[in-house]
Length: 256
Figure 1 (spheres, rainbow, N blue to C red):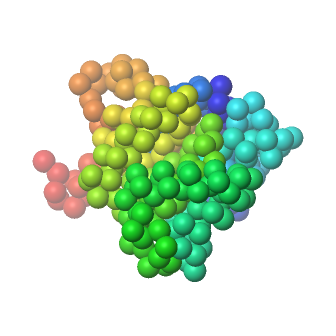
Figure 2 (tube, rainbow, N blue to C red):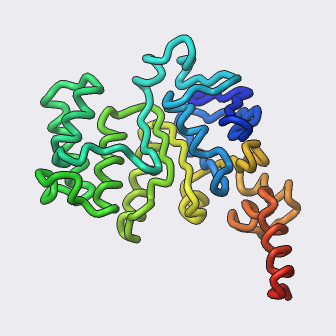
């Protein structure tokens, strides 16, 4: 397994962000992590990326335990945060050089890989412009390039399509397919359910810090007894949001 999460709990004061979450993701798998705002998705990603520590439980990244071997785990991981931290005074190319240096890559390797991602994401013409002048979509692409420049075995993508236009979303899906073909493991967290349904073999649904459901779409359909349901309907079912929204509509006099 490339990712193993066992009994992870994380609280912020009285708020339980993650409540004994356990899941595993196989090597070469694209796994979708779904949840409404406040469900615990970003908290779990931050625990995996070692930005915060869980209060209880264990996490392994490619057999490296985060508690006993944090550096080994970090060397195998690439992370695109929902709100990535860029260095606005650097150009796009300088930012990739900076991240490549932190990864311990040789200068020639950094240049080669930077050119690859700059060309693929159509950022070559903006490569020497400061990041602070980038559009939201351009900033997202340079952050994704930075997450991938170290060619990590495990890639965490938190809302990766935010700010991307349809052609860029399509390109992103091709990148995901290629990562999988190369044997990489991808944990994809997104509100764009059609992207998740097309890219992921299995999904996990978080609700109020708990793992409400996990499996293939067919397995979730069987569990929900909804043979023809798409991922959106299944998501609403397992989070209980379908019932909550229908109740609010009825209270507002808008129910059928």
